[in-house]
Length: 92
Image 1 (cartoon, helix red, strand yellow):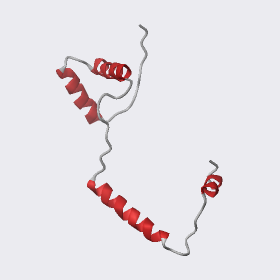
Image 2 (spheres, helix red, strand yellow):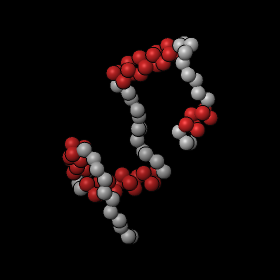
Image 3 (cartoon, rainbow, N blue to C red):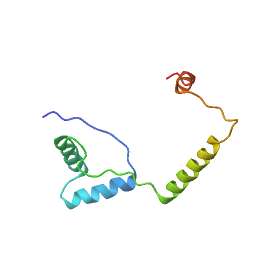
Image 4 (spheres, rainbow, N blue to C red):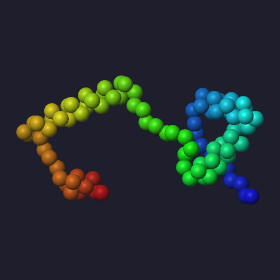
């Protein structure tokens, strides 16, 4: 089977930790990443949970921004744009 190269950047600490985990299974980085790619293709997707769990700080920030936005909504002098106006303004 013909092979190809993949080059990508990752954090040094992540690379080191991944290499250590792969080595515990007797795999080098290339073999470990190939194992993950083969599983991705075989399963037709990612075989483990990928979750977005926002931090407490982010949730507090977002709640503040939503409250501010809600208050601005009550301002009688605010400008309201239609979706068409926004698209035209941004050429989309």
